[in-house]
Amino acid sequence: MESFGERDPAGLQAYADELRATFMRLQEDGAELHAKAKAVQVSAKSRDGLVSVTVGSRGELIRLDIDPRIYRHPDARGLADTITETVHQAAAKAREQIIEVFSPLIPADQMEAHLEGDLESVLAQLADQMGGRR
Image (tube, rainbow, N blue to C red; front, top):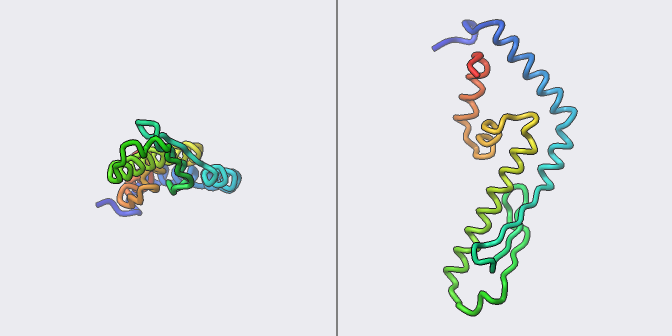
């Protein structure tokens, strides 16, 4: 395994310069990007159109609307599954919007790994960058 001292100094310097530039852009644009991300709300409708949901930036349910026609064929399990599926659909769209908001500063694959809590992928990406293997 290659140690920190054995890495290409020019590659490390380039990476350090890139990190500095990203940090400076984050300082300049970070508050605005954070506000945009926090304000994300996505609505989705179920396939049958009887369930509508709105979720926030973290996929949290903000609003749920159920069309009264749902009572024509009462099916509690089916309704629960439809609500769950529709919330997941909206949450996935919200996640895509968050990734897009931060795309000027953070590559999509890195942001997605962060949002998924995939520490192994995040660390592997950082190690590749530090080693100059983009």
